[in-house]
Image (cartoon, rainbow, N blue to C red; front, side, top):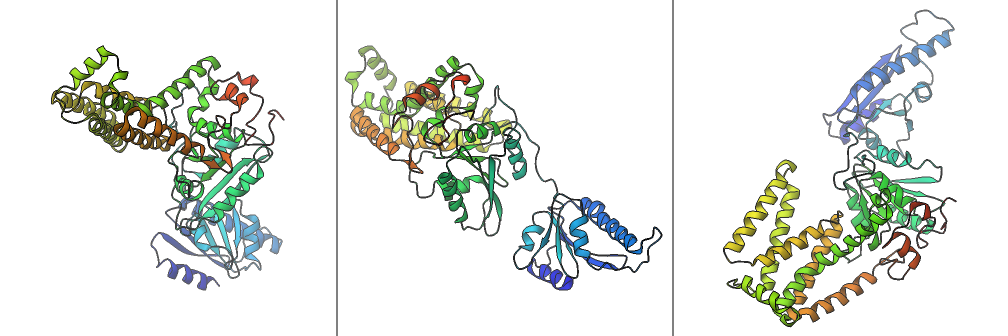
Length: 492
């Protein structure tokens, strides 16, 4: 069997140079050791696994001889595989059935294969290929915890479990991807989350059939957002463990993907993107003001360029005379209509922001600031755009920075252009028409038969007053969202 297995692995991997094969003989007991040195810790294999096997064989031989003297160099043990399986003190030891188990999954997951005459034993010897737990980068933590998820699947689960220490916190695991065989875990609190939501997510995960899952966003696109034409995010993606725990306690479901530092939260409503976990670390009256600012910023970044174009192109009578004169003076000499002017400036700012994302962080902010200043000043001096347009587009861009979720930012970017096009065609009436289409589009989104606009539509006055527009003291938040769970009352 040993010879066949070794030959099979060599042939299947084209004798890959990063797979190590060692023939070991201890007291006449022969076995092969196979591991991938790129993902396994070589020192653990040699200093711990092989030495442990040697000690186990020697001790077993002593027991069989019933003596404590030097053992003969030729003392075969009848059932070597059982000895290895039962006496190796490592975190994971598994006897492999070659008809059911994938040898290569274990080899490329950092396991060491011990091949005897009658069996194969897989011993976990993973190398540490992960970065340390650091502060969150995309979601700044001001007063909250400073740890964030990394690319290590088990450590990410540990960051959640150290916050929620209950046996009701469950995780169901699947291997997804024909070639990547990535672990995808569905985590939920079984007495809070609705079973039908959990079951639906797990069934969709099991149906995924692609080559590889390289990041959690692949799960978002294929599993949860698949077939959904809306540009608005229906899933929360976060790198903060405290944020995940907050949503789990509401009855939501977390999807953890191996090799991804972002965890997906399902389902998400549009109101969730106006709230932040740090709202619960501050005084409630300060949070009310902050949340109102977010809604105002949402309206500004969505509508401001469109309103400016509508007022200056079609509806000048709606502008006070002095302000209209000021606008006319500033636009004097600008060759392009307001719509083209706004579109060019929006695209310029978006290019600068995209460049800021791609350039190394040490130079990115400086380049984008200098670029914006130089381009803006040069454009005004050359008479290509008016100063007021620079103010409008800059205010719009700054307002959009309040939203950290890149999918929400992209949705706002898309609808900003749509509103701008309608405003350039029909002025304020066009904005009203676009707004009606926008509302219809938002209210038509359903997640697991739950309205995306909850608690605004259908209206839940209690939730609006306690934890949406308003925020009560933490001691007063004694109920969960009834749409997410049957276990409404907290502390139960």
